Amino acid sequence: MRLAMIGLGRMGGNMVERLLGGGHEVVVYDRSVDAVAASVAKGASGAADLAALCSQLSVPRVVWVMVPAGAPTQQTIDELSGLLQPGDIVIDGGNSNFRDSMRRAEALNGKGVDFIDAGTSGGVWGLKVGYCLMVGASAAAFGTCEPIFRTLAPENGYARMGPPGSGHYVKMIHNGIEYGLLQAYAEGYEILHASNDFALDLHQIAALWNQGSVVRSWLNELAERAFAKSGDLADLRGYVDDSGEGRWTVDEAMRLDVPAPVITLSLLARLRSRQQESFSAKVIAALRNEFGGHAVKRT
Image 1 (cartoon, helix red, strand yellow):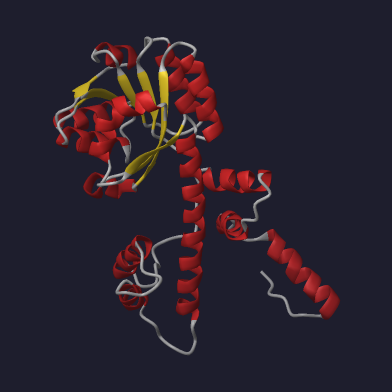
Image 2: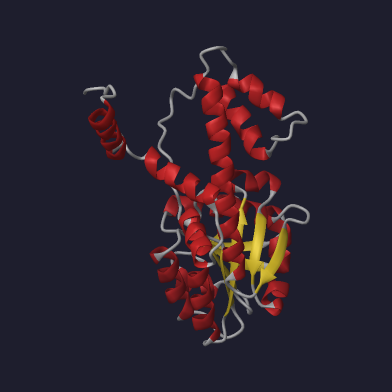
């Protein structure tokens, strides 16, 4: 089928390539002229702006938005709402807050335009192995767009979660779980790396654990790849960003009175990673020195 893709970054560009490989016709737009040219070279049709993009689509027009969450997504959807007609469909495949998606669905539905939120997981590997798609949509809109989902996802890799908003809700929790898993692996490997009894080969251990152990996983396969490049990760800074879903997961857990200590602490660990020097650690050191005379390290 024919559809449009707005946003040709690490995910969007690869998704266009996978769609083209699946026989779809894709019209593309990005603020980067070079990104548009790269997709056009692979078989897509380019557009200079959103109006030109919409004019190249047939009814019902399907437009997939793959831009950063927040203001960029809102601005894009606001502009599209003035260009689309009843029966058209907007898909947000970014990491938007599910409440924003519910609000956007209601606003677009008031104009007769369907809104789909497609929580998308797979990262840069999605081009090769496919993307896991958690879809929030009406049954009718889901049916219309199912050929797109089928092409983007691996076998059994997409499903309708419920009405609009549910896809991004499930993706939010998915990413919260990811925070906890990453933190557990990180802490385990740090203990191994810090051992003063054994000189351990982290690449060897990761490769071993991927052969039948209880903790084998795709994430640990990626750890094996990373340690193959650098056994002590000496070329990396220990700075870890977050894209919002971990915070939203913790907020939702508190709203529902659901204890989620692992995910919460993994989020806080990311915040700690961004400090060159922890002032709170300085306070603890000072207090221990004051009440117990414990030694402190001076700058």
